[in-house]
Length: 277
Image (cartoon, rainbow, N blue to C red; front, side, top):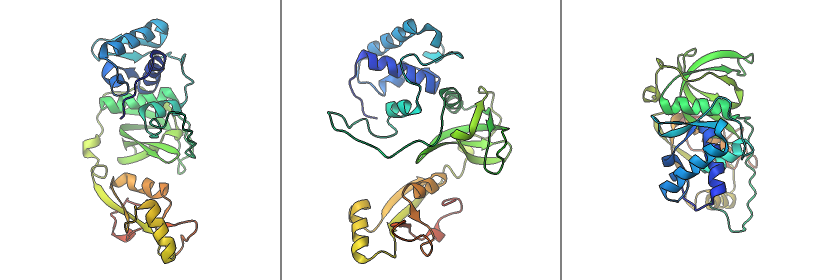
């Protein structure tokens, strides 16, 4: 993550963003973002605590300021895009100096800082949580106990990878379908080290769609593949389907045709189960 010098007011906003969305903020975490001396960052956190005392309290064991149950945004607008921009997931922070950039990336997932920070804490501490969830197969709100271990950004949506006690397997849960999260509890469910699919790296190759003309295929190679024959990814098995969706790559080239699909997955039948669905 690139470090950029910024002013005191911006660092105070960063303290609030991390506090609300990650559940705590520490000097090492701020040092990942701001290229200033550690003592300055400590003063920034203390200044925020004096400015908004109801939002945080210092935890000597964690050596961090932790969020209170009744914390509310005071310096920021409480939008997930603010958190995303701070931690750099959209990779837009380097575009500055008066250069305008407009992105078509929009979020379809409504995310609130309270549930997100509880999930973030559970991942950080390796604990399980109870969530209220809805799905297409079960659209009525119901309770599940999960042990999360990673977030996945999949285009306009965000998911959390977790072991589900109800399904007895690791699954991806859409953050926009989680309506309540209970605080982390002692874990009995399997953790990330037992998620074999997550630990499996596969090679995913995207190629020009075979129904393109030679000139069209070369154009696609120049645009996506730097002139080479394929765009190659080494990706975690459960994430590969989201990558295919993001690039809008055809899996069945007899039905998924140009111009709607100009890329295709190379030999999809050779990929392991779970790579594409």
